Length: 170
Image (tube, rainbow, N blue to C red; front, side, top):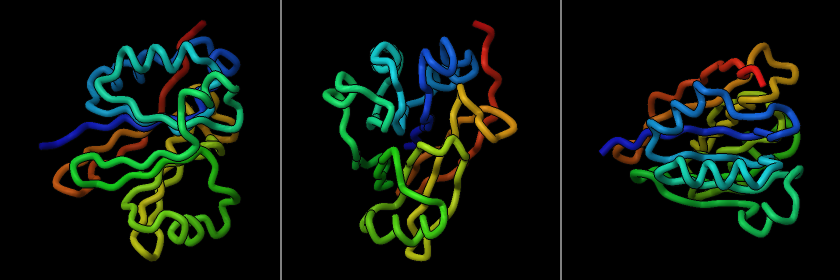
């Protein structure tokens, strides 16, 4: 059975934007699993995603306060359709990331991370896939805000797509 996944991070609500983009909400409502790799900032965002997602997996980030830290782990490990995931907000400097995370997350197929707001899709020498969805609300040095969709099926992650998204007017 195929499982549709939406991957996001660094929403920073309501600091960077007042709300998530409508296009992202549409993707969330069509997904089987939603992943959020930290820096929520606002507990209301967690509440709304829990309410509107079929299954939500999240971790806290460096900008998340005590309320979010009490509700979310720093690192999450979980399976979706035989794909072994790990998720953490920060992975350190980009230089050497693939090898460093490959050593740290052995026995994992896909590592989802955030923090940089820079989309990342690479595979370490040992086969670990690293994905950073960027941010749907704060593009920083990127041309557009972004999130990722993918499909887990039969132990494989496929159809990985980076989606540019416009912020909705406040």
